[in-house]
Image (tube, rainbow, N blue to C red):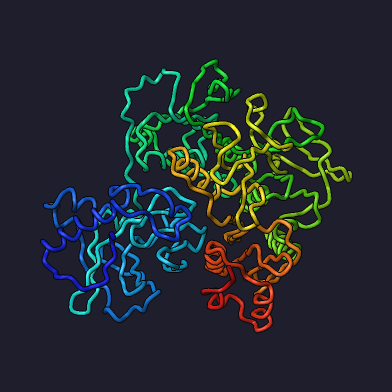
Length: 607
């Protein structure tokens, strides 16, 4: 399969091209790697599994040689099985991998945020990103778990006179990413037609991945995706970390992309009702659209905060790039107040410290992140913020926002404390954006979440839901219905929903993976830690170099780390294989002082 070679082959160009044709045929018949969360899916087809390198050679056998680079990168014995090496081809770098006696060469950077994959986790035919947990098949380069939209390019490898030689397309070496081939809509559709075979409500990661997956899997009927936002889909997690970024800079796909793949995107289009009996959606402007299959992926909305002075300006719930830009501008050399110690609120506080004159954080709890990361980790993070001039007012709430000429000037706490404030950001949590479904016939729980099956189906025929709005059965927690509002999980939901829409029964098989970034430091987190009863810390919290294992009874249910990559991805691999990690094993390693030692995790755990 593309990019792998187990036996030495002749060097002649003619043989090389024949090999590529053979690889294309094999690829067209074979599914994704066995360990993929979607390994039971039908294949995308040969074009979707070929790298830019392979495709260009196969379609243009007389392609100009100068578009390619070929280099001897190492001796055949330089790599043992299970080893990786980043190699330089002159025009760019590639990741060389040896597994089961076979060499593979793929892009060396994760297409999501550019993480060096050589520092990732290689396991059973795929590599997991050390930063955010995305997985890629090492033979095809295909993305198999998220976050991210694009796959990796693959490059030809051959062995000649004990030398490992890579031949690669220069453009693919530079881009380090590959978008899977997609079908187009074959039906003749008038854009004003009030019917779509697939209607997607929401253009976040669940909606976007759903639309792309449908086209990757050969769906050729109409797809309409609508969003209340005026922008094209963008990288929302960056809003709270990079406040000055514009919508254009955060954009995930261009309008040209949607047009090229016949995914109709309707912006500033709010759905006000859904009728599952007639399979009709009604928009705020009066437009009605019928559907055959529907995905609800509307995300979350901030929980409103009750206080006196709601008419005062410069108080924000961070929702859009314009909100983020305004917060950064208003905070410049001024006083900023953050209400709430959610991840979003704390990320905004961290981002403002080098802009604002003062940054104050108000929280109900005594310690930030105590419920999610534990008291010890929470205290260490709080100390990091205080070192960076952030002032905390914990176990407190807002009573009033006071203004002068309509502009915010003071935040009054229930304790009586008055804080100077020129801008305020409220980050006190969110809830599912599902109010428009109240009379739809779609079941929701008391909190407004939509319960779905492992295939993302709701109680209504042809209606699927994913992302922040759902509770779904998590296999790692004995199929308990949970809500996981992670960027990564929404991607997974989009793909699973799309495959099931097309009749390919596919269940959710992934490990929740989350990250946050503050002051240039990242916390990575894998698993589902709700209800943990103990935290085992390895490393040094004061130095902000640690691993935290969250346990329930005698089992590890989640892990978090700072400055110990790729241990969280390694643990995610163990969880993903269906194995468990025992609390006693972690305690033993902790006593021995083997912090960050991952060798014990290899083939660790019990089924």
